[in-house]
Image 1 (cartoon, rainbow, N blue to C red):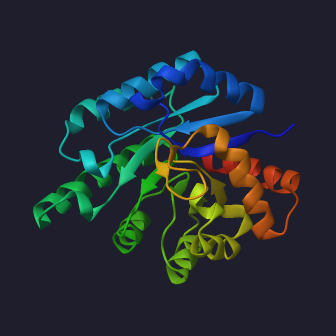
Image 2: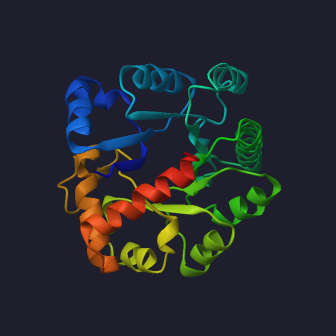
Length: 251
């Protein structure tokens, strides 16, 4: 039987902690794995701890652009010390909504580039936050030889989607794709070999899911809707997604 993987979820977020035993049990019963991304040093440590509890949790360590002013050296050391235990580097990237001036954005770029250098050195895939900064990210990525690049929660236009395909990036779609026509159109125009699925939990969705915290158990619904949009059987798309995930992770 195939495994479904949530390509981007913050399982180490404190909001999930009270329910973690139930979440891990559900993942095992439903055959779902999780690329568990981190925000900073603290959440990276929590991600590592969680991955030791359950092999279905695939740990990604990194600095989110919102946390670009955090201690970079500590997270770099943590990644290096655990390089043989982690599955990838993330969540990393750029986002101008978290800065008020050019200096702040330049700091984000510097941190992002150092995370990319680390991913290149360790031959680890990356999970990229690219809200309204796709063009800047497209200009930076070609400077690095990266094993796997995921532009998570892809929200670009059709031209940017083609650019992502041209440089070999994976793109992921989440619960918003269930009801968003724009996301559905982008999904239909994405190369089938570059599609991944995610929840980005604990993000909340106001439509369709009643503003509930996104759970990894949403994944079958996301896959089902994607299969309808793409005109494929559920099991057929599940097999494609598993193959794509393994390729992205380099396994």
